[in-house]
Image (cartoon, rainbow, N blue to C red; front, side):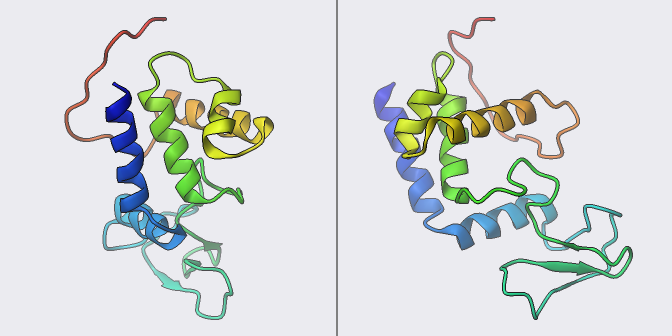
Length: 145
C-alpha cells in the first residue's frame, strides 16, 4: 500500500508542477471551455487584463470580479494549490484518520494550517451540494465509522 501512495504523490507532482497548472486544471474541471460567474451564474464574462493576479475574471451580469477558486474550499487561502492537491490525496488515501500533525509534517506546514486544511477538505467531502462530482471507479477498504 505504501508504494501506491508514493506513486500517487509522484503523479500529483508530475501532473501539477506549479500553481498555473493547478489553476488550469481547476478551470477545466469547473468550467470546461466556458467560464461562469459563481455569483450570478452568468456566462457573460471576460478576463481581467489589468489585474496583477492570475486568472481574474470580470462578470458583465453582476459586475463582480472572481477567479476559479471563488466559492470553493481553496478560496481566500495563500497555501499553494499543489499543497492543497497533495493534502486531498493524502486525506483520501489515508487508511485511518490522518492527524493534522502528520499532514503538517508531510506537507511542511505548521499544525494549525494543516488542521485548517483538513477541516475545509472534510467539510467539502461531507457537503452533499458540492459542485465537483467524482468520476470513474473508486475502491474502499477497511473503512470504519
